Image (cartoon, rainbow, N blue to C red):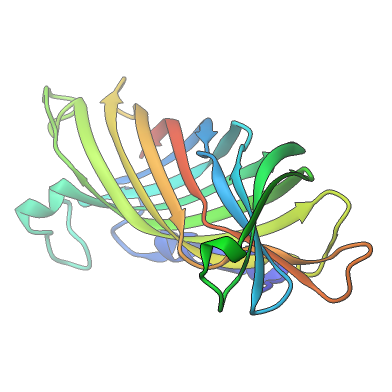
Length: 258
């Protein structure tokens, strides 16, 4: 499904604007951070379909290691009241995050094993396997992730009563806007929309009362059919090229707490 840039900006802006409009939330427990780090994708099969009945699988395609960058807005449920009432004591272990990242997924032209198969024919002797080239490709990708965090504090002091050292885990959906492209092929669809699962676990250290540094590991997988449709020279009709990405990130985040 394609999405226009106007709608993309609206999707990203509305939750952040809503957070700033909530009375009692913004300046008590709010934090904002910048983040970045390398991202790795294991070798992945890419499936090419020209009809419902026939598919070609490029096996074990190797992806480049790229860098992810972005911004995070978060809120910790501190006991300073909200709409005239206090949070329960146990809510201090929870928080919410609005996370936006940008990255580029890419792979070079390479020789891989190709497997041809008709979907209604499972006889092994009817399948064909041979070495072939897959052209290079890339995809710019923006991921918007509203997440819930669970954390615990160690080493409390006067400036940071919850604790200067805070291991945490966050989980939530990721709304993905991407533009998958393959070199030499004409892309049919721009600004595709997909849905992912995002899980992050890390360690936060409060350098100062208002400044923290996070070191974390993030895993993402995209549930929906990730890829695109293409017009290929010499081939009649549209070719679908899809794959199921698993993305592994090291994340470093520097944040300011209001």
